[in-house]
Length: 169
Image 1 (cartoon, one colour):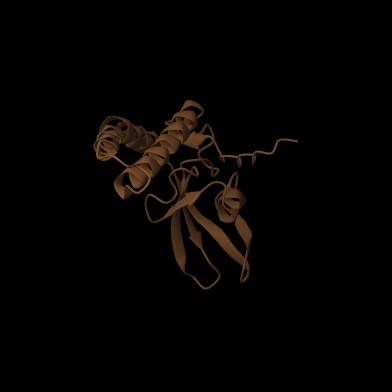
Image 2: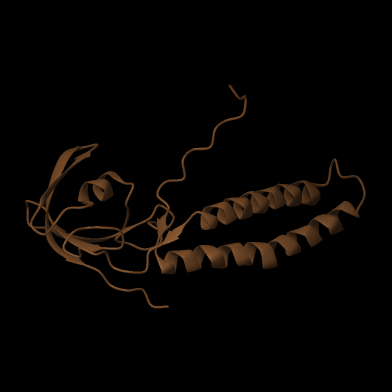
């Protein structure tokens, strides 16, 4: 058994073209802009002399490690991603990328888009396919009832509509 902690599984490997562009842009900004700027600041701080009491040097090195860790993560993640840019063969079912309109028993309606774990926080209404509600919705059809176990008890929804739209290039 290794003494190093095992990495948690990264979740589903699916991503929308829009989400992939956002991750590539973040990687590009970190690698081309922020990392060289931080390297230059660390070099300037190191030139000031005693590094043991130099807060600029210490925090700069820490920030550099954070950037490098994020760059490694993004490169590995993007290499294993599957960009889903076509609607599924059966658009009557809920799959990745679907906009789903749900109705609760009290008549309240909610609209969600099923996306991957790397992009659900990007916009209101985006729901990770790995979340309990996302998993419960997958492969369901129009008028199906979906029951989700939530911390406050189970919740029931009925699927009112399913739509797929293509992302703009």
